Image (cartoon, rainbow over all chains, first blue to last red; front, side, top):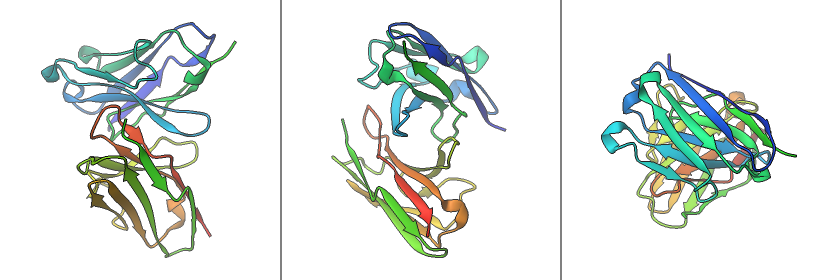
Length: 114
Length: 107
């Protein structure tokens, strides 16, 4: 059974950092291209970042709204993908999903507020 | 960025009715389009990929079509469990972009 489980969310002040983890199982993670997608309180989905596989040199791509502040990474030995979020803004408040596009995690809430 | 214009924003359908949802891309996305269903409090579920390929386990009443900049999702025979919000996603060019969603309810 494919599983994706996100952890690391919470309440954080503007300007601070947070790191999300997505632990996966049930598929060959090392071959997978993984994404982070977020959903705002207004329910709009926004693609955040992608990391490709080792065979693609772990290429990464970002939404303009997070470029330079967020970093996606992966550890194939742990079948996990990460999202390091720095310089957080109130508009980053959202549910963050880890996804392979066909399988999605349950999401983790990130609230940025003073 | 490629803009995805999704319509209608909301839709009410009777049991057994056929419904269609449209997504128009601001440029050719070469069928790199997926459709998702999201039920309240749940993660999005993939229905259709590459514009017209049915994801495993998805009922055959769901179908996708289109090419170029125009795409549609059809539900042939609305069922109560089809209530939810539907989103399109283009994966042709970075950054990937979603449509704004269509809320589908039973009439």
